[in-house]
Amino acid sequence: MKKLTALLCVLLTLSVGITGCSLFNSVGESNNRSDGTSKNTASSVNTSIRDATGNAASSTTITGKAEWKTAIYYPDSASLYIQKEQKTFEIPTNASLEYKVGICMDELVNSPRTAIPKNTRVLSASQEENTLKLNLSKEFDEGINGGSAAINMALGQIVLTFTEFPGIDNVSLLIDSKVVQEFKGHIELDRLLARSEYIQFMGNQ
Image 1 (cartoon, rainbow, N blue to C red):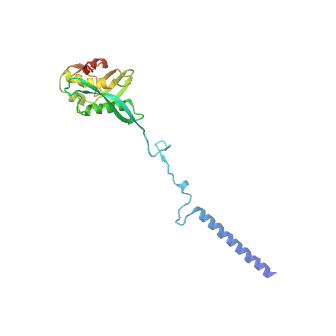
Image 2 (cartoon, one colour):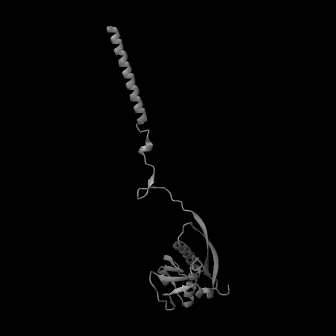
Image 3 (cartoon, rainbow, N blue to C red):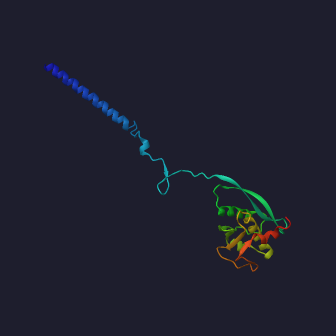
């Protein structure tokens, strides 16, 4: 009886030891790699990019492009008349009116044939009913040298170009955010500049 009891005790001890080892190894393997890092990295690493509000946001913003066609007006080679040319620009599909005005003004200013002073910039542009409210930088004032013919050529380029935009028939012009009554002592700018006034500068086209 004593031998049987001793044998049972030995068997019971071995059984607990084996079970204990099996349980330890199972827990160890489920929680840890051989290098000591956790297997369950998906829950411990946040790979999403979040915006300022804490909402998940994409790491990149993809903006579509589209071709946009419009007419730009340039002086002819003798600077006697204004000629119309069709241009195609690649712009964002959701481009605003101000964006479109800006790229047209860049084209007008940087053309080899232009009466508009270099470095003239669009400070703001918006549509109010059938009028484009256009605010140009001070370079437009500072850079024009000449009489009424040169001024009308520059204004004609602007008015004819922007009244090509759908729904725009007039331009209200500010310079450096200011209303100018008599521009260079020749032209009143504190009124609407209508397309019909500048058609004559296109000659017999």
